[in-house]
Image (tube, rainbow, N blue to C red; front, side):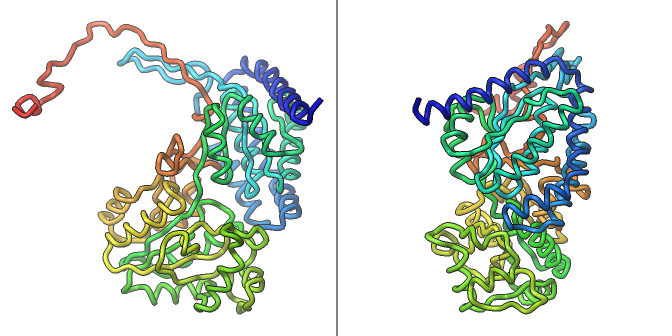
Length: 465
């Protein structure tokens, strides 16, 4: 038997086991799946510290306390969002239109797990999947396979204690691209969290998929902003797991009147403004052959600077590079997965909007952006004209757009980027994306057909039509 056939049989067996378990979950009630999801969430709250330490020991990236806080906050936040959600049976009954909507499982979900947040993708994905009475199979990133497998196995043990089929959650133990490809083709739905290549593969697999685009968040600071507060919030985003999240601020576009003041505020918040020589050294170490260097990303600023060949003062925790260009010749305009922020200057506000759109056309299309401003009309203008799925206002983008208690965004670990980012949705991926729906349509008695005048109005008088 060839290696390919052996691999195929292994994936087929996982999918078979998942389908058998999903058949059992098909009969669960709304309250039963909600209780299982709640059990996963509370288990994650209790296991957050253990998972964070284990993940750090495997990968040696990020910040342990941030990982703990993220797991606990997301577990609680997801529970807030699903506590009254309807996903089983009749989920909507519209008497006026005589429409009933029924929620049904999608089947077996293939979850593509990234290196950056493996524990979160597993438990959040499973909370969403079980709400729809689905099974889930994880395909880990090779560098994070031990963390992924640990979280999967511990949730399986939880299922066993709850008398829930353990095979509702499974994992590829020795991941490879070929196994992930086979899994994607064999499952019913793909939720792809990872690099652009993996997301493209998910969309090319022939299986329905929710992919997420690359992050490269750009924020604007205008002349009406509280610049000290804005600088502090950008620092907060950088320190949150050392910028591992795709929502982390990567570039700031500052109005020229407050540019120097803002840089001073950033410096007071632990930012270190690199000289031109230091910027060149930083670029040389952050990118190797045009790709981000895995040896230095998601590391402390002092570590990155040392690798680049310069030393940081002890009170400096993130790096700032002044930039003017955009595109491949200016890599700092792209996503950096590092505590490094590129800063640009603008004169008029339309110029700032153009810079945001141009930067994200190069990297991070459709993902997220932010603005620090006191002008409501300007904030709305910014939201209307930027090609983005999310706009965070006077908040750290990296700690807000995937859900937080101080805003109404749905809690998630997956952020759709719309057609700008070659994604099927621009929404935060939640439980509602893990169900099929059946519409039941009944006849509306005594219905009235509107007149053409009511429907088309003044258009009917246009002689050019």
